[in-house]
Image (cartoon, rainbow, N blue to C red; front, side):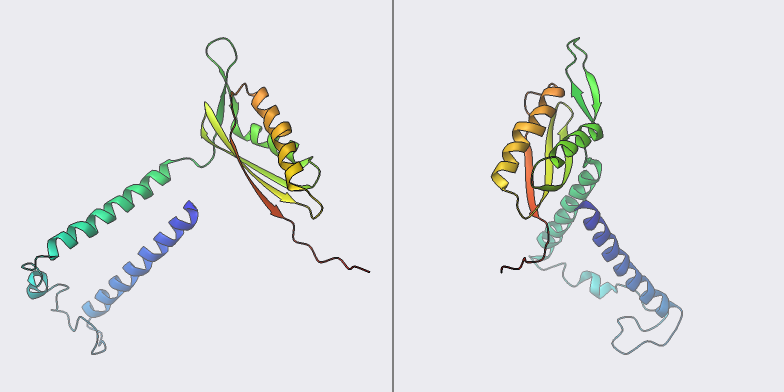
Length: 192
């Protein structure tokens, strides 16, 4: 989601800046512009004094400006924090019994969970992603189900098998998981 949001925001900002900058450049170069164009010549300014002072005496103007700027600041901070947050857990802290602990690569645990989930009856493909903190990871599991699969059995096999083994091998007290099931696209079978 972050990638889509970044691309959308950058494309929108770039388009706005390109249109505004191009409009000012064309006007500044003295190219003839249509009559509806806001700037008519080289000596025209972007904001005239009358435009700048038009709303100053209105009671709603300053609260509206402050509210709009506050919304922009909150959105910019949200975007910045989203950039700093890692989407994938790079390592998991494993209690080794010596008081210091050991670090397990998150990708290795993801691969082990995914490989074991792939072996479940009715699972065509499994993708696992670890999120959270290294002391308390969370698993996001996406399972692509075959047409004959029984979701209840698959979920039970996943929680009693792959997730339990990962929890035990990493020495975790708990490993909460969000599981998303999706069916494989297939053609309808003929009934004779």
